[in-house]
Amino acid sequence: MGSFAEATAVKALDSHHYQANFPDDYTVPHGGFVTSCFLSATALHFSTTHAARYQLHAIALHLTFLRRTAVGPAHILIRDVKIGRRTSTVHVSLTQASDAATAEPSVVGYLTQSNLHAEEGLSLSTHWSLHPAPAPLLSTQSLHSGDNKNWTLAPPLHPKFRKAANRVHFYVPRKGQPGPAMADEWVCFSQPGERFKQESLGFVVDQFPQIVEIHPSTSPASSSPAIDKEDQAANGRRKQETKKPNWYPTILLNMEVKKALPEEGVEWLFVRVRAKKIENGRMDLEVVVLDEGGDLVAVSNHVCLILDAERNMSRSEKGSGIITGTGESKL
Image 1 (tube, one colour):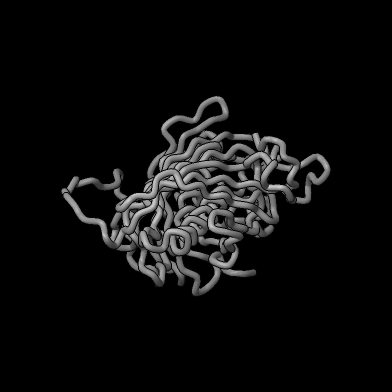
Image 2 (cartoon, helix red, strand yellow):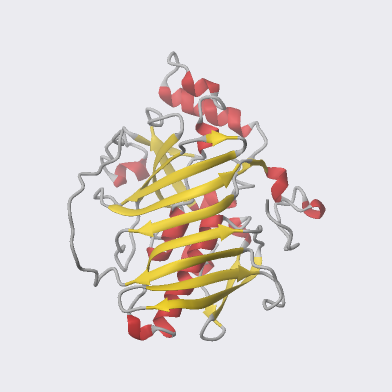
C-alpha cells in the first residue's frame, strides 16, 4: 500500500495536460481523493507552466461531480482563465477514456491559486469559535495509546465498500457527538509516519463519520439516556454494520483554504461536519478543519445525495466493489 502522496501524484503530459492514476484503495474513487488529485495537478501546473508567479497554494475551489469516476488512469486538463499578480484562476476538467479529446468529463470546476506565505493586507479578529465547543484534545499521544479520556478510536463502517476510510483513523468524542446532525473528529493517516500536506486537504474535507449513520433516527440506541454514551456509540455501530451501506455521492464541493500547512505536513487535524437539512435523499454538509492549535485551516461545503450503495456498482460487476468506466452518470 503506497502513501497518499504517491496515490495522488500526477505527471505532466504537456503544459496544460496531466495524468493521474486512481488506485483501487480509494474505491469510487473517493470524491475527496479526486479533489486532492486536482490540487496536486494545479500545484504542479503553477510550479512549472507558471513558475514565475509563485502561486503554489489553492485558496479556493469549486468542483461539480458529473459522473462517477473509475479506478485507473485519469486525464486532467487545466485551462488558464485569469493569470494575475496576486491570484490566478484556472478551469479544470477530468476525463477517463482512451481518447480524452472526445470523452465527456466526469468532474469540472475552478481553482484559484495564490501564495499564502506572501499574503498581506487588513486583518481583523472576528472572535469566531465552534459552538458547541469540542471536547478538549488533552494530547495526541494519548489518542495513539487509547488513554485519552475525551476521544476514542472509531472503526470505519463498511470498510470493504468505503475503502478510503481505511486510509485514516477517526477519533470521536467518548461522550457522544455534539448534535444529532453534527460530528467531531480528530483524524490522522493510518499509515505510520504519513502526514497531511496542502494537497491532502481535499481528502480531509471529505473524510468524516457519516451524518446519516450517526443520526438518532437511524441509530436509535444512540439517543437513549439510560445507556452509557460509549455503549450507545458501540450499539449504533453494530446496528449500522448489519445494514446495507448507503452511498453519499457529492455532486458539488466548495473549499476555501485559510492557511498553509507546514512543508513537512502535520500529523493531526480536527474536523467538524454538520448538516442543516436532510430531506428527500439530499443533504448539505458544512465542514470546518482546524489544526492542533485551534487555528482555522479550511472550510468546505458539499451538496450530497443519499442513495443505496448498489447504485455505485455497474451491473456486470456488482459485489466486486469495482467501478467500470461506462461513461454513464454516477447519479
